[in-house]
Length: 475
Figure 1 (cartoon, helix red, strand yellow):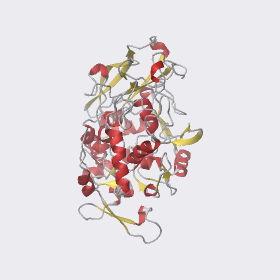
Figure 2 (cartoon, rainbow, N blue to C red; figure 1 turned 90 degrees about the horizontal axis):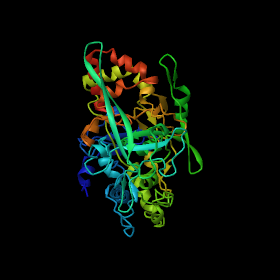
Figure 3 (cartoon, rainbow, N blue to C red; figure 1 turned 45 degrees about the horizontal axis):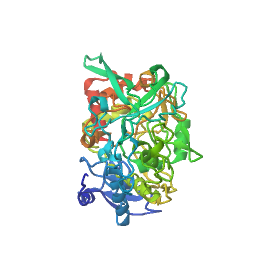
Figure 4 (cartoon, rainbow, N blue to C red; figure 1 turned 30 degrees about the vertical axis):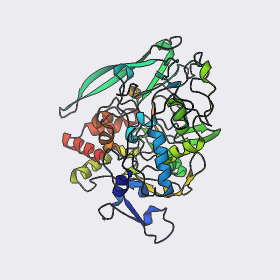
């Protein structure tokens, strides 16, 4: 088990002082936020208002927001422990039991170490270093329905007495290209295959595979607190025919209600999917998902009656942990190269989808057991994303639908914290399946609605392209 030095985090976290000229402290327009050195923070540094943390170490994504104190810190630590501690295949252990019988990781932290992204390795390539794949494979039939013996996610791990559903492997094709100034770059395209099916094999022509690596858990609470009216306005205004851009919302149904999706690669979630993650990824049952993940499979007859393995109260502590994580402050905002890169970011029209500034709603969000978080309300935030769906072209088409999102449509990835991914997770692999090995490759994979920005970036001088990368590293 990993030990965290929270006293160190708290000391390094931003000190928040609310000086209210008018109104409540929830409106960060009326707040003065001091950095650890006592200086007033530049507004451009405040990625998430009062949830901004001035942390750039390996724990930059995994530090509580400054308002997490007292009993809230107790809940944060309880949720963090459940998030990080390995589950075991012991049904009588209420805190760590319940793993399996099918799973893809033994804890949330096994794929989101330090709340980041695991390296996109496959079991066939030696795994993530802990024996399992660092990628998640969504599978369905060509008509979009699911296979009865498998469900929507391929589980490549199983406890004793159960077989993994299959093994994911990949082959890679690399092509080299050239910028107009002669600098070379290359793009790697993966082709995925599933073998060792536990039941009847599925023919490749009958199968759709959508492979994804874990997202950074940055700004999760703020994403849930986004102002829905602002999102509707963005969708209505996100129409730039001169650049081929037209974003749309993903409307999804959860718990028999319709919501604007904001979470996930395809904006396919309206909550933080804590219960779904424990069920599908770890095989742990809860009040919302009381059946074992392999329920209905021919091999799961004996594993279907263990009952609830984690309480709703504990699930909400994990929900609170994720919602109350601080967002790393922007760095080097007054650096000349960073400023030049920001100018070039705008020249390439990247800001039309990676919108710098949004706001959270005034009504406090409620966690899955009813706890409300007023600290997330009324904040000006800088996620650099519009949370809308955009056509990213045939090269990134997974052919897998999520709600209203077609296979070629992806949610604009919020860029906050992206500059610290290498520090936190040890790699610069980007896009949904990690095929982009660095910032430049991620940009050059843009097509469809991102084609104009890609071409504008491509035509820049190397100095200007490098400045854009330097800007991204400041986020």
